[in-house]
Image (cartoon, rainbow over all chains, first blue to last red):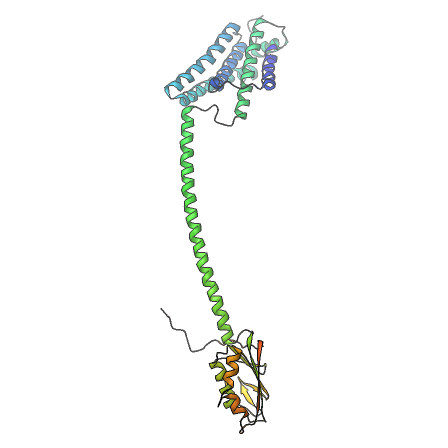
Length: 110
Length: 246
C-alpha cells in the first residue's frame, strides 16, 4: 500500500516541480530509469516468490542504476556510447520481460 | 505466516498490512523511480532532440545537415538556371508573337479581312451614265495604289484588294461580282496629300474623267479619318503554295 503511494508521490512531485535535468546527467538518466525499473520488477517478482528482502532490494536498485550509468559513461569515453547504451537497454529489457513473465504467472497463473 | 502462501495472497496482505520497514523502503525507491521517469519524460518533451545527444551523434547530425544543405543549394542553382533560361525563352517567344501579330495585322489589312481606319481621301466620281467604266476606274485605283494607298473601298460595298476584278456591267461596273452604279465613291487610306495628288495630274484620273470625252466631275476630299468598314472573306489559295525559304 505504502509502496504504491510512494510511486504516486514520486510522479506527482516530478510533475509539480518540473526540474531541469543537470546537463552532465542527461545522457545517463534514461538508462538509469530503465535499470531502476528492472530492479523494481525484480523486487516485485521476489516479493511474489516470498523471498523479498528490503536490503537486497536497496542494494540491487542502487547497483543496477550505478552500473548502468557507469557502462554508458565508459562507452562515452571509449567512443561507443551509443552502442553500449543500446546494449544495456536491450539486456535490461530482456530482464524486465522475464521478470514480468514470472509476475504474470504468479498473479494470473498463466 | 504459512509457507505455502501464493503470490496473490501475499500481494493482498501487503495492500492491507500496516506499515513495515520493507514497505517503506520500497515506497522510497519507487518514489525515486517515479520521479526520475517523469523528469526524464518531461525533459524529453521539452528540449526537442539534441540536448541529450552524444557528441558523436551531434557531429554526424551536423555532417548530414551540411550535406543536405549543399544538395539543396545545388538544386537551387539548377532551378535558378532553368528559370532564367525559361524566362529567356518566354521573352523571345513573346517577341516572336508580337512580331507575328503585327505581321498578321498588316497582312489582314492588305487582304481586306478586317475593317481599317486612318487618314486618307474620299473621291466622289459623278459622270453621265455609262461614261465612266473600268478603264477609268482601274487607272484611278492603280494611281492610288502607286501613291501608297493601304486600303481602298468603293461605294462602301466593295473592298479593293489584290484579287479584286473589275468588269463592265450594264448599269455600271461590276467589282468582284457586285454590280455598282454611279456615282462612285472611292475611299482610300494613305497619306492624304499624296493620294490627292496621285489622282490630280495632267493625263491622270481626274483629268480624264473631267475631260470632254466623259464630262464627269470628281470631288476629292482629304480627311483625318477615313473609315473602311467592308471586309472580304479570305480565300484559301487553291494552287499556290509558299516555297520554303531559308
